[in-house]
Length: 97
Image (tube, rainbow, N blue to C red; front, side):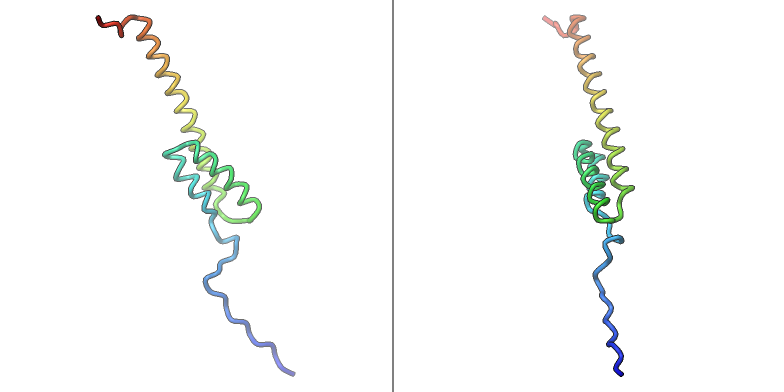
């Protein structure tokens, strides 16, 4: 009776569960510079992670949180800048004849 030949180990191929989702990394990094890109990539990464079982859920969530905080801070800054410019215009400080 012959024994089955031992299979050679597979080097260079990691199981899908050990890989980190690339979009999760992109979401985290881009959320510091372009909040909207971090938000979009974070949502896509979470969807991919759910389907594939890859690692990186924490990175994607961090990218989403930082992206949303950056977006809210940016909106507040724009509103404050508009209010400041409107107050200067109404006080006549911009009218230098």
